[in-house]
Length: 369
Image (cartoon, rainbow, N blue to C red; front, side):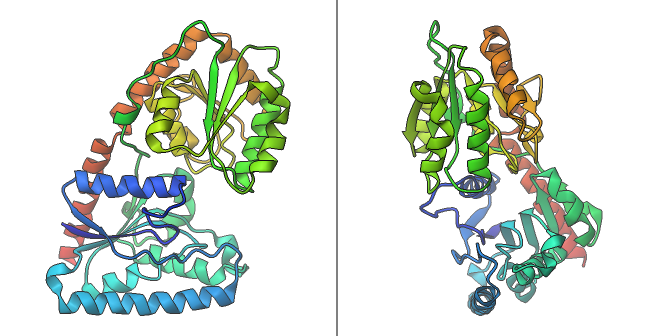
């Protein structure tokens, strides 16, 4: 099946790494593993960081023109036209101005993944973006939900409840398949996160607070990532001093190698949707200590693959880390369970099968309409 893929927040080949870009790439990969002919329909970004209504109006106008142009092109050359439109990650700051219009013009199914609605934004600077996101969700033939927290607001917008499809976060587990920890050394903690203001910086601050309570224990911490909040992150982790190894931004294969030599992944995950890095760590057989908010519970099974603590609770985070530093056998059991669980339940092959089932359903429904 020929599928047009679109990510309004950030295209999957954007030069700046992020979890969002990574998940977009994984959806592309899973669709191809499932046997589909997938192409990036557009790299047009609708993202508005500031809530500037004038800018949103300009972006909407550009989006409408682009949608009309795409529909005209494919009507003239139907052999190149998509049979389904797939939009990844739609919300009030990054609505989809293309997909619903093209899908209507061509009469093809419109599929969303990781869409969310924020009713409280109806009177904010993002009101037009929120309205556009709402309309797109209402138009969707199905919404693939990676984060169960999105379900409550999305479900009332769908034509029927069956259009919400719960979907486990996934990855290609092969690059993360082998651990090679050096025994006899202090436990090696690791975290992988961009250094941005907002929730990322807040998570780093919680991490610094928590680990500063454990200076009586033997451990080291490797921090992979960089970004505009680097100086503030350095200040947050300053009490950890010589325990730290700043790795900066690394490529995917190098990150996999660093994970393979780690003993414990630590990340407070404040307001995290689910956290791809948490999955990558577990795929490497590395147990996790994380904040238990958002969709983190979808990827970390507490007491089996790691430990979850209340979001923002630095003392509880510290105690969870302390318990695993002191118990290498439990760490090892968690790590093996994590590796197996990712391969069994969160692999790209199982995601491909699930995607095909969703696509078959929406195609069947469209043929009956």
